[in-house]
Amino acid sequence: MLNLIQNKAWALHPAKLQEIEIFITTRLEGKENDFQIVKPVKNGLKSEDNYTVTEKGTAIIPIFGTISKRANMLDDFSGGTSAEILRLKIQSALDNPKVSSIFLDIDSPGGSVEGTKELSDFIFENRGKKPITAFTDGMIASAAYWIGSAADKIIATDTAIIGSIGVAMTHYDVSAKDAQKGVVRTQISAGKYKRIASDEKPLSDEGREYLQSMVDTYYSMFVEGVARNRGVSVERALQMADGKDFIGKKALLIGLVDSISTRESALENLHIRSVTKMDYKTLKEKHPDLFAQILEEGKQSNASSIEKAKEDATNAERERVTEILSAEGDKHATTEAIIKGTSASDVFKTFYQIEKKKKADGLQAMASSAPASVGRQTPSDSGNEKTFMGEVEKLVAQGKNKADAVREIARSFPNLHAKYVENLRSEKGA
Image 1: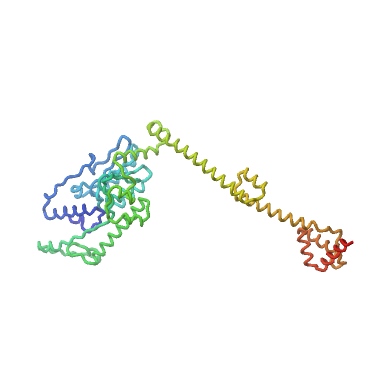
Image 2: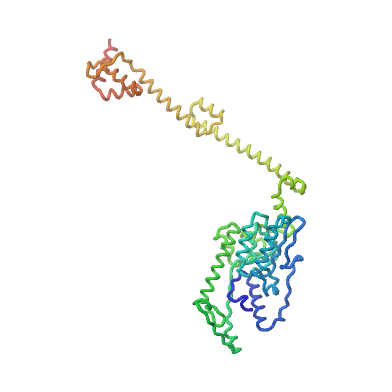
């Protein structure tokens, strides 16, 4: 019987774990009658019952008492829940066409780590198929919270106890009791760690370290699971996972639950979430009151959205026009851009091209104002005006503008340029 709890990892509220330990040790001492075994019944359901389906299509699945992977004698003591059976119930509800949502009705201090992670993963992986709410008006602690956190939402009452996130393990040393009874047990094993923490001797430092490493591993899994399920970082989950109990609104404040509500309100909220997945025709025909309510809220929301969109559009247009005018660019281009709705960045490109063209035209005008040549000679011929301007015309014919051509020939043939200037002065003097 001791093997039910000896060196076993528990994600269980400390008070319940102590109660189970007392129960086990009392039975080992032959004092079975000191405990009256009564399976708790809540809301007309025992934990081993299948589940009920409300008129609105919500499957209510109870999770009461201590959670273990499989049913065992602890179920008789605490009205426990088997993780394996619980998974079958949830799968049945997911497959049942008459079920539109799932309500996990939890009042549990937690239980064995074994089987809990797998059940939590299963619930998380089935999110989205049907709305799932975890609800408690009693306790959702340790392994029960690990499981409940995988639901879409967690709802609790004001007085509910939430949390106790952590992992514990108990080692029993019965060597003194064996000695009193004259019992000598000899452990025969192979492998260094096979019996390193057995109960026939005190726990060694090496055995303690070994058990602690197991607890730490399970604790990391627990924290990472809660972080994933609740959509928070591992660092944030660690702040929740210090083993503390939180009551009602304090649990809401640190993010362990999504809202504080009554059972009735939680069920109604879940029903509304489930019908929002219906098609338009079904919602209108089978839920006319809810359809009318949603329609009215939609109208109000739409009107508000239209006003907001108008306001945003007005502000955006005001900013666009102001930005264009502040650039003080070409007036014609500015007017055209405002009328056509051109963006400020595109208008600025147009302004740049206009200014660039104006500068080029100005240089061209300067070059054109120079006296035109009437002929051309090579630089080595006579050095008069016709030779200088002839070389200029050569470059113009090659594609250069006249002003650049004049400057280049003046640099290349300074003597020709000097004679050209001298001839111009002579002509003016005459």
